[in-house]
Image (tube, rainbow, N blue to C red):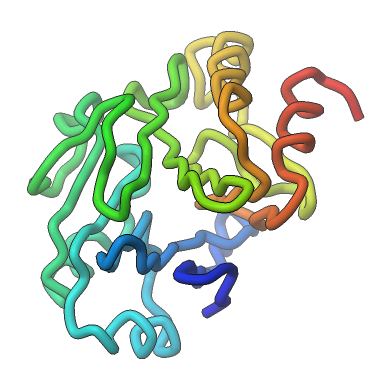
Length: 200
């Protein structure tokens, strides 16, 4: 369990299939305990998260990041929030849905992304300090210190998908916390901009 910033922790589960970490986030923001895209819990993560006894909200960034949400909801009593545009494709029943431009528990601002792997793909922006951006499958933290996208066969149109990610650059962020791979704690916006422009 890594303590990244005040009120923000990350834990990881290594996927042998994908050969990279699947990351979950535990956030204590605005008096609420929030979890994002939970992979299997480690004992260390369970100890940190469980100290409050309950979790207020469980946020899923896209239909494929439900992961351990149902088990997590049973253990911690969290309300499950999923993207409205992905809700019909998610096997578990959510407690609530969210859309682009809304705020979800913890004060996170929802940034909906077009032409991605799933219609509900969303990022969460925490407008604190120099800005923290949380993504699910929109960007992968691979190689470490850089970003990439999912394989081309995951998209209807890779060029449109990449173009859809340019919306992220409308917001100020210094840190990029990824669902898959290695998060970038500083200088992330410039790294994302270089990637989307195709410059080294």
